Amino acid sequence: MDKQTFLDKVVFGYIKKDLENMRDKIRPQPTTIGNINFPLALCVLAYMEYLGSFLLGHPAGFSRSVRKYISKCFTNPDEYPVEILRDIFRNGLAHEYFARGSISRDGERPAIYKEIREVVLDSETLVNDFLESLNKFKQELEDDIPKG
Image 1: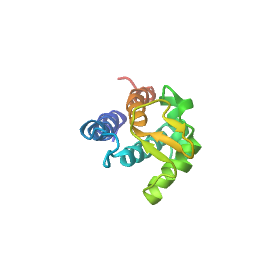
Image 2: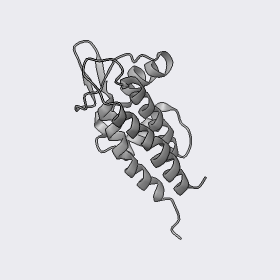
Image 3: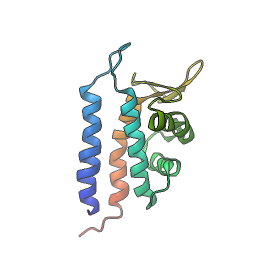
Image 4: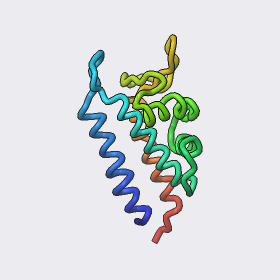
C-alpha cells in the first residue's frame, strides 16, 4: 500500500472514522455506566503507538513510538507524559482491562491530572487532541511523498 492510500484509507478512514463514531454516537452521561471511557482511551493509545512507529520508520515499542508521535503531532505535548500513559493507563487497560488510575470523559483540560488518591486521564480530551493531530501526522508523512 502506498503512503497516500495508507493515509486516506487507514488513517482518515478506519482510525479517524471509528474514533469519531465512538465519540459522537455514544455521548457521555454523568454518573452512568457505559460511557466508553476505557475503549476510547485504549484505542487512542494503541493508534498513537502504531502511527508513531511510522514516524520512527520501524516498530519501537510503546514509549518510543508514542513519545515520537506526541512530540511531532500534538499541539500540547507537555500535557501527555508518556511514562504515565504507559504505566498507569496503557498497561492496565491492555493487560487487565482496568487502568491503574481513573479515566473520565469530561472533556476538560489538562488531559491528565492528579486527584487526591490517583491520576486521571480524560479520554474525551485525549481523543479530541488525537483527532486534531492526524492532520499534522499526514503532513509529516506527506513531506516524504514524491511530488509527481
